[in-house]
Amino acid sequence: MFKKILIANRGEIALRVICACKELGIRTVAVYSEADRYSLHVRFADEAVCIGPPRSSESYLNVASIISAAEITGAEAIHPGYGFLAESSYFADVCEASNLTFIGPKPDVISLMGDKNRARARMAELGLPVLPGSEVIPSEEVALQEAERIGYPVMVKAAAGGGGRGMRIVQSAEELPHLLQTARNEAASSFGTPDVYLEKYVTSPRHIEFQILGDQHGRVVHLGERECTIQRRHQKLVEESPSTQIDRETRLRVGHQIVQALQEVGYTSAGTVELLMDENRNLCFLEMNTRIQVEHPVTEMVTGLDLVKQQILIAAGGHVPFEGETLGLRGHSIECRICAENPQTFAPSAGKVTVFHEPGGTGVRVDTAAYAESVIPPYYDSLIAKLIVHGQDRKEAISRMSRALEMFIIEGISTSVPVQRKIMADPDFQAGNFDTHFLRRFARDGENSS
Image (cartoon, rainbow, N blue to C red; front, side):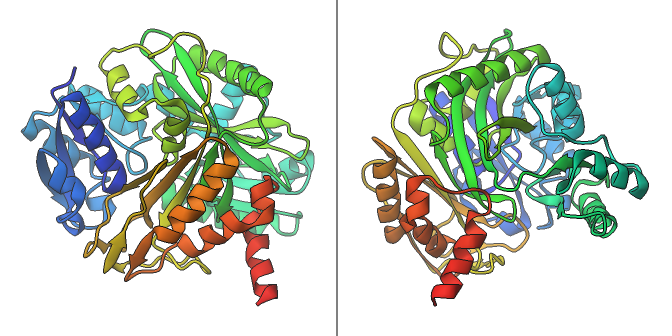
């Protein structure tokens, strides 16, 4: 087992990794930017190293500074969390070259799955259904030809993308040139490459994902699915497990297909296979995230497994902790991402938190690094807390989440809590009738009734 792990991240996920390490008896090293000097992950780590100014390009994305921090503190491994360098095959390569264990998949697997176009092609070879799409688009002329072949509407997607950036919906040939260039510019700015491809756009989709664990002994398992359909700007706001759209037979069948494919790839550590469900409940492979997900707690709640501990144990040579391909899911779990943003416009709301009261009680969990008098800086993602509940069934989980949201008091900044309370009270959400456009329709209905 490792004696010391450096956490190459910040905020609640850095604190989450620290908690897992403490329970395993592993010492921790926090890295922080000047903006995060008084953050809780700095306070609760055994050691902390400042790695640069507030801008992430000069701190949390500065590979040389992070490797130096690991070397001077004697860390043996690096946990990347999610975001920043978590899916950088270059960073994983540098870790290996520096005799540091990267707690995640091997660099070649990160590289394969990080290129959405290559990942789609490989998964199709291994038997997973994929949406009709194209190779990387070299020119406007090819884009028009490929869109005609696929059939409008199509989605322009960044090959190295994520988080809704570098994505545009195209309804017609007239729209394509402008939206193609816009997506390319955004992709280049966000991911360092302008490469984009086309994919068939599903009009009323649901977003389903399967949680995966793979060890270094050739075993891959799945831990069921999460429903991540409630989104704004292609970014998730509410997640739950299990999905109302997936029965036990489908879970076992699709899970088996995914396990078989990732065994062929040689996948290790935690990962998530993201799927799109169309109006006929067909599931198609979208992409794979080769890291721990923001929404991993809902899977932890319905399986009883600590996924961050499992990442660490697997990286140290351990085995997947159960026999067979999966575990039974117990009850129902829902997560709300509490974000520092205007609940109507979703514009970021940085500033000082003047009051911070977490809800508690049976079946309630809060993952956060915020506290009263803490400052939410403008430089990073707007996520400030994750509110997770568990119930015997979905009805109880919704009721519990409604109660917990009502008791979550955050003042000094705007948050997403008001809109999440409305979502929990909405009859269509309670009935499981929604798609990825739900929040837009929900907002319009609110405007019409006011």
